[in-house]
Amino acid sequence: MNNQTPTAPLNYLNHKTGLWSWLSSTDHKRIGLLYFYCIVTFFLSAAVLGLLMKIEKVAPGETIMTAQTYNAMFTLHGIIMIFIVVIPGLAAVFGNIMLPIMIGAKDVAFPKLNLFSFYLFLGGACIALYSQFAHGHSPDTGWTFYVPYSAEASSNVVIALTAAFTLGFASILTGLNFIVTIHTMRAPGMTWFRMPLFPWSLYATAWIQLLATPVVGITLLMVIAERTLHVGFFDPKLGGDPVLYQHLFWIYSHPAVYVMILPAMGVVTEIFPTFSQKPVFGYVPIVFSSLAIALVGYFVWGHHMFTSGMSYESRWFFSLLTFLVAIPSAIKVFNWLSTMYGGSVDLQPPLLYAISFIFLFTIGGFTGLTLGSVATDIQVHNTDFVVAHFHYIIFGGMGFGFFAGIHYWFPKIYGRMYNIRWANIGWGILFTGFNLTYFPMFIMGIQGMPRRYFDYDPKFQLGQTISTIGAVILFTGLITMISNLIYHSKKGAIAPANPWHGVTLEWQIPSPPPHENFDEVPVITRGPYVFDNPHTK
Amino acid sequence: MSNNESHITSYALNFKVLLVLLILTTITILVIKAHLGAFTVAVALTLASIKCAIVLTYFMHLKFESLILRLMVGGVFLLFAIIIVITFIDYYFR
Ligand code: HEM
Ligand SMILES: [Cu+2]
Image 1 (tube, rainbow over the protein chains, first blue to last red):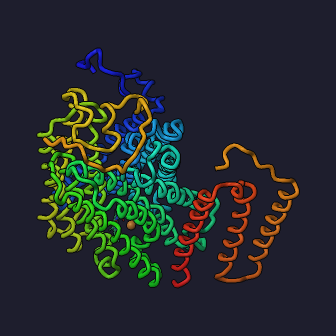
Image 2 (cartoon, protein in one colour):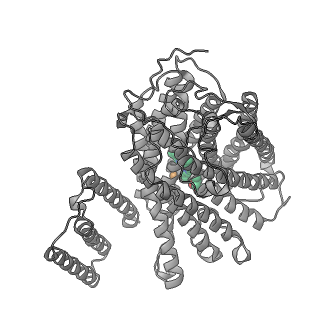
Image 3 (tube, rainbow over the protein chains, first blue to last red):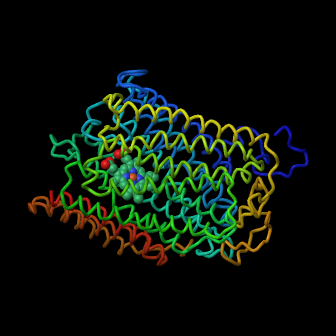
């Protein structure tokens, strides 16, 4: 703030100052930033754990940690990344900051509830950390907490599930808030089909958050009932069924993967038209594919259980439904590509990240089909192939979608511009490192390398070492990217209101936005992607 | 939407609803004794759904809400029902 001129107009960043004005703010943009800083911190810590696990595997045998430490590390890595980073991720950060602006509202429908969700999130994150240190030994069950092991291993499972429940509650309330916001707060003239596509993806996401998340809460209550009252849900000795746990867990956790990916799809859907200066191709199909993904996503959870002893009929049924989800996903990919086709494509960092999103997500999606067909899944289940699949989807898709979003909206959020050259270099390192880390895991997985092992047969030495080198490069790329952003959020050149010539509402207001977004409520008279200003460079 | 108007339902109606709920609860308990095998759960869940629907309609005033809201709530329960049915496909065939 030191080189801010005294006459700089008041905006949401400086209209009030002091730590307390941030911690008690109900401004959706400030809450979004609070989430952002928390999530980035957790992300970097969990990334360090990932790097350490990779270093352990640089050579066969024990190198830097014991098997027990390794087990605890992948559990903590998974819990943080899934429940604290990617599930809230894009919806909590960009959803909060951009949704009200993009639909022409001054805030979300329930600003105080929004702040409450943030503190629930923070509380849940703390409980998750506490579960690691309580009773002197951290859980080593993996982030999926499968019974019977999780029921016998240590009592920390209940604490970790409480954390997931609390984090889930934050997610439910955010979803509720967004649904009501979208139903009731759209600017005059903004009909449903004049709404930009990022809000649409948040709408589909919000319904999943609202409806799927309670299941994990119920599961928690069932685990507690079994442990304390000995009601037999999961333990065969009490007449229960361990597979029921897997059903309940995945009824929530498969839809949860769409909570992660749908907003990322929404972000890149905003980026392609802007950097092609061309309306999005197939607006209506994109809307309906988001809704279809959200709906069909509820019915495919069993593809995580093909080898669990589930009935034959269920296996083919879930396999069939899993293949159906690929259809709306592919519709989106075709629409993104067609949006760029024939446009005046400007390869700025946000677009680089968005194109990598398509590339990596497609690899993740195709390998998802390999896993979705029962016969091939039985070969590669619980191998590194699965780990590579979901890293391509979650990190390559959701992660790169997040990076695309922050590079796109950074000048709007901070009113300053990052260094484009360094952003490009960071992208290059990140992209190279990413593929070097995870691609070998597909191959090793097919060759039989099991997941969640701290040691391996010497025949995997080459692949493992490449993967470790990749992880170091990947981490370097992350640091490059993030330091460029942190540094320029304070010292960057002042950014104009609309550096990318975008046409959605957030680009029509000053950067950074004023406290209540709009001085006067905008009236919408046309669709969101009309590029008729001939401001070519 | 029916915003702030309050809807006062008569004591008589509320009492009738209560009575129906109690009767259904009794049946739920009796069903356990009837030894219907695999269908016990199905019957119990059906009865519970009926009770739930009654509570939503009368006690939670869904009866007075707009069509869109009723559709949303209905859709949610339909989804929930489908998920339960799919889960039980596994148990039925195993
Ligand atoms: C075309 C779409 C997709 C298909 C067909 C698909 C299919 C599958 C299948 C069948 C598995 C189970 C493999 C096994 O355990 O043997 C799996 C695992 C997984 N998938 Fe996907 N997937 C898709 C998209 C996604 C998306 C969008 C995400 C997240 C954003 C995701 C995240 C995961 C995760 C986290 C796991 C591993 C869970 C674990 O066991 O720890 N997938 N996927
Ligand atoms: Cu899944």
